[in-house]
Image 1 (tube, rainbow, N blue to C red):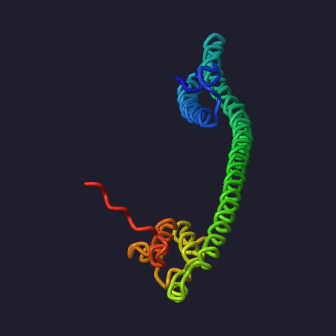
Image 2: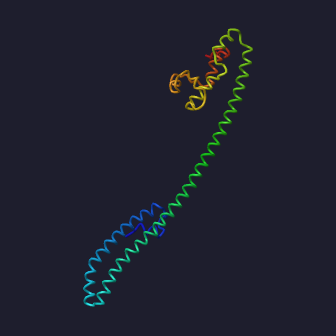
Image 3: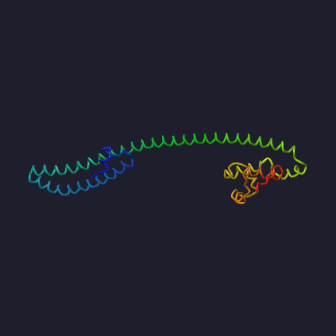
Length: 223
């Protein structure tokens, strides 16, 4: 009887609000049974007690009163235990709420640190991108000095500084959160990528160099 309650109070398992509530359910079942038992005893013994009083049978009266008192004491004991258990349940809930708050704060702090680390990584990436763009742009300006008029005319048809492609790269790779959506030419991100319009920067640079006649022809392979 009341196995869960014995386990909780004997510390055989951790005292949690869930465990205590399970024990309370058992204790409540026992209280209902004790109420029924008290009613049964009262119905059974009261008539006999009246007869014992009328007969002046002290021994019978004492025995009957003892039975009634035992049934009442059992109910009182369980009722008192329920009151004490309710207090322990509230205490366990308060403890668990405090622990949950501490764990939640720790999780938030961990996420904040990760976000700061991601921000640092983005900062390094931006600085690296800016440096690479400066080198790329400077090389383009040097190349312009070596282009013929035909090349210069063709230059106007080429996004040589890659600004539009960089905007498209950012837009596609961040789900539209960064970059210039106008560079997608009215397509959705999925449509733009499905049509093969998103080209990696090195590949785009190779295509541009080839169109400007800057790429050295491949040497014939030896037989």
